[in-house]
Image 1 (cartoon, one colour):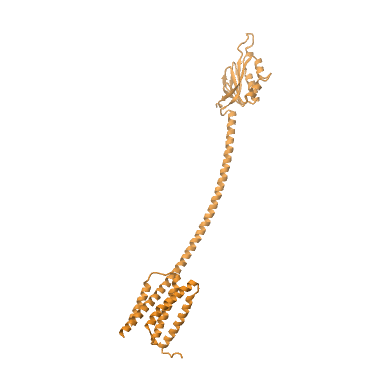
Image 2 (cartoon, each protein chain N blue to C red; image 1 turned 90 degrees about the vertical axis):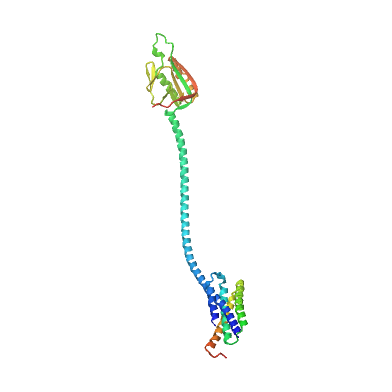
Length: 232
Length: 113
């Protein structure tokens, strides 16, 4: 009887143990679930907040990206404009260099002709010496003729002649812009050598005139004439 | 007589101290198992009061009911049918019936019939 009671108690104990365990475990489990839910709610709020922030950041990024694109486009346009301006400037600079060469601010070189004027060596004793030497007007005539014929640059004995140059006779020498040169005078002209030479050699042209005035004239083409820049 | 209650306390303590958690998916099983256990316990008390208590029936009923409830729930979840409701219904009904009979015994109320 006692054993039986004890056995009964043992079984009851076992059952109650299991029952208690189940109840307690379930209780704890439910509590954790509730806690988890709370955490989840908090998490959700946080997630929502961060997501909102992310969206804002992305929008910002998008805006900034658009700005960058716009700026890049502007930059590209500017670069293109600059390239065009550079082209234009290089053209202009080339033109300016050519013009400078023409006006004498830069050295110039090219094909052309030279005319050498020389006093007549034989002067009859009765004759006036003035009739046999080269005068400034001869040189001016040659120069005018050359300019009219299209010479781009002129020089007398290596000195450039410009639009404002003056040539005067000082006794046996002539002065070009203040520098004196004795005979013979070599006038060089850069330009189309063929045209220049032909215009000088026209019948009743300048050469004939000079020869008639007892001046020894020598004329010829040159492939390469160099002139220095104006000295100032 | 106090030994079973000691064990009950030990069980509760163990349950509280157990630190592993089961997925939410299986919480159904737990509640069903508890329901089954309660049903069997009250059934045992009732049998005891009616002097019809049988250890074998009690112990086998306790574990078998729990297992059956869990299996039923499992099948129900596999099939997508809430079969555990059937278990809850059956166990709940029996629980109330048992408790009412126990009440009559305790308060010495006259039985029906």
